[in-house]
Length: 303
Image 1 (cartoon, rainbow, N blue to C red):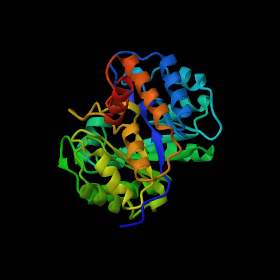
Image 2 (image 1 turned 90 degrees about the vertical axis):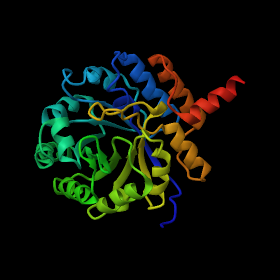
Image 3 (image 1 turned 60 degrees about the horizontal axis):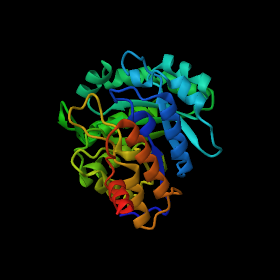
Image 4 (image 1 turned 60 degrees about the vertical axis):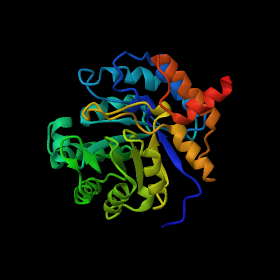
C-alpha cells in the first residue's frame, strides 16, 4: 500500500456527463450558473459540455452558448468532450483548456456505443489528439467499462492494459479508469489500475466511478491506497450511461469531498458551497440530490 496522497484533484463532470442524458432540456443559463457555483465552491477542473451531434445528444446542442457564457476564472480548467475531428474543430471557437476522448475496454460496448471496434475508435481519435496537441490543448482519455460491461460481464485487466496501450500510442497524456456501470469492487478496481499503470505513471491516471451498487466511495478509497490522487465526480451524483441499462449516476462530488476531508486530505473545495451547488441543480431538475452527504447536511440544516 502506498502512502495516501496529501492532496486530491477532483474534476466535476456534472455539467457534461451529469446532464447529458437528462430528457428535459436544461436551459443554457442553468448550466452556466452551475459552472459558476462549482468554481465558487473551489472546483479547479470542470467538464463543461460536449461537441457531439444534437441528433444523438440534444442536451448538449447549446455547447457554444454555454462555453461562451461562462465567466472564466484564472486557475480553473474547462474541459469538453470531442468525439471526432469535426467536434474538436467546432470546440475551438470556445477555447477549451482540455479535450476528452474516449474508448471502451469492452469490444461489445464499443460497438454498441460508437459502432466500431476498440482499435477503430482509437484510430478515429488519433487525428483529434494530434490536432489538439498542435494547438497546445491538453488531452485526457476516458477508458470506459474497465471492470464490467453490460453486454460482456466482467472485463479482464488484460483488456484494460490493451486500451491503455492504444491510448498511449496516439499521444493521450492522461487516462481515467472508469467503472461505467458501477459494478466494480475495490480489488477489481485496483486490478484495472495495475493494468493501466503498465503504460501510464501514477500522476497520469484518475478514477471515474459510478455508484450503481453503492461501491463508488469504497472504490475511491481503494484507488487512494494505490496513490491515485485524481478523480472525476459529479455534483449531486448526476448522470448515468445511456448505453448501460440500470447504471445510476456518477459518484457524488459531495460524498467524495466528505470522505477526503474526513481523512485529512486537502481538496481546496468548500463542502457547504458544493452542497449548495448540488441543491441548486437538483431543484432545477425537480428532484432530490443523489448525494447521501448532501441529503444528511440539508436535513440537519432544516432541523
